[in-house]
Image (cartoon, rainbow, N blue to C red; front, side):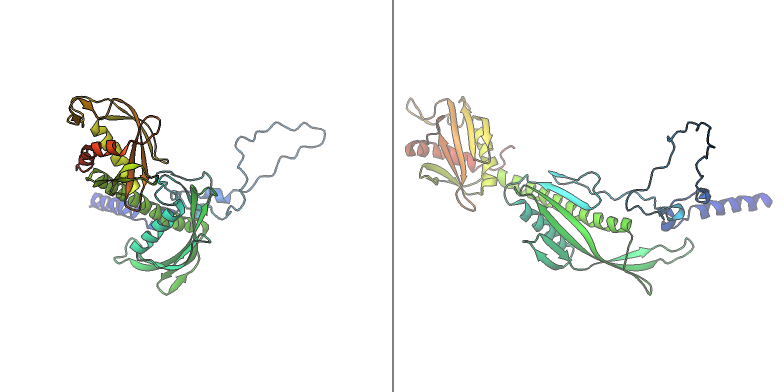
Length: 367
């Protein structure tokens, strides 16, 4: 009987030990005897005697500026620090920066970087059903409306029902854009905070919790931005692989050219696929200027195997250049040139048109 009671008592002790509350798991545990330790005075050496040698190897460092001296014992939080996660391509954080800030670099030239960041932030707020209190693109500041969430507050281990707490937060987003416009820092500050616990209202939080709130919402914004980028990439790949219509026309300089029915960012990679299918090797390229330096090697299986007028060859093997340029919101011009940047004559562009347009219109080209 005594053994049975002893075993039951041990099981109960183990159960009690494993039922620590969330608050207990967030604070330091163990012995706090060190709090009773008093600072020892330095050794006073009488005049005329040598001072013994001492070491500072185990000396405690001085408290840094702004450090909270009350974070000791049970008051010391032991949760992992809140870190900003630079998930977006071209993003990074500055080491040692206390604010919730992330830097973005321009990697997509389809729109200005600042516009892309604001659009993504507004899209995130709209998706979460969060209003905008004020927004000034000129001052580069956006202040959100209240973000209201309901959170369960864990009671004692023996409690069957947990309490619910309503938390409201308002944030201020600031955008710092470099003069060249290709780098920008997005910073978030907790502007207002209010939490209800029963009949109690908490309107202030400590610095650690404030940073945790700021980093949490910033990481959500970053995650949404990255998701939008990946979604846009998927859409672009689908568009690139999809056949595009082509017609004969002229570029902005009046030279004979092919006019593709797609915006520049879709027509550019699509042209690379088409050229490869047509038997061209791309030697060099510059997307910012729309220039392609290619070499045509020919071959029996090449695109223009049937492009002969009797024994006359319409396109000789050798080096050529192409100029890809915007011709409108959803149109792009492609100009073939010789190796000295002289555009093809209109009759030559016309002769090559049918085969070029046929490959450009094919679906599911390999990427």
